[in-house]
Amino acid sequence: MPSRRGIFITFEGLDGCGKTTQLSRLAEALRGRGMDVVATREPGGTKIGESIRAVLLDSRTSGLTTWAELALMFADRAQHVKEIIEPALAAGKIVLCDRFTDSTEAYQGYGRELGSDIVRRLHRELCADLWPDLTLLLNSEDGGSVARARTRNQKHDSSEGRFENEDAVFFRRVQRGFEAIADREPNRVVRIPAGSIAKVEVAILGVVEGKFPQLTSRAVLSR
Ligand code: TYD
Image 1 (cartoon, helix red, strand yellow):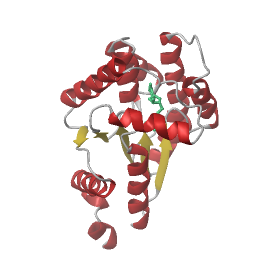
Image 2 (cartoon, rainbow, N blue to C red; image 1 turned 45 degrees about the vertical axis):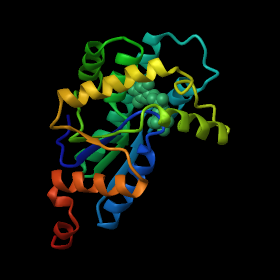
Image 3 (cartoon, protein in one colour; image 1 turned 180 degrees about the horizontal axis):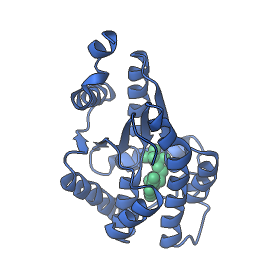
Image 4 (cartoon, rainbow, N blue to C red; image 1 turned 180 degrees about the vertical axis):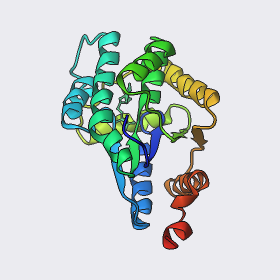
């Protein structure tokens, strides 16, 4: 594995919890302080990954088995880690990633009931066991966020609705998965309470500055 000088932060949570908005706000704030930020997402983030994303999220994809779904998530991630994340970290950049292996544990491990062990094993074997320095778990008021994501996709005529078409029982299992991960790894995973976009943005910046004092505006100014 290349030496790691950068910082790796991931955003997690149910569909429509607002993580994509928050990721771009944090990216903007850090860039404003002169930091070199790579903002990326899963599935996707590479050319190959965007093709895999289309298969995974398209509501017209039918008959994909749960194991094939899991394998595609990891095919996407293995490519992403090697092509984008590791080189950026080795170059000392800050990598902000919209979803990572915690999503696979929550959605495929808990949601699809494939279990955590296989997810963590595949991560070790296929993704160089690379874990984020910090994971921000955005909370959303019970299930409302999934409905929001569904409406958003309909409004934008997006075909990315395969997961959002799952029922409330599925999303309760996914949420339970995220909670279990946060309980298991309190040093890495920080829960961000739901709130207005501005409030959540402030909360996230506080957590990031607390964990990485070298990123505070004062530290950056005195460099
Ligand atoms: P995303 O684009 O983040 O959707 P949203 O902006 O609505 O949160 O994620 C796409 C979908 O892919 C989402 O429903 C969760 C699912 N997913 C998995 O099931 N497993 C995974 O490992 C990842 C990365 C995503």
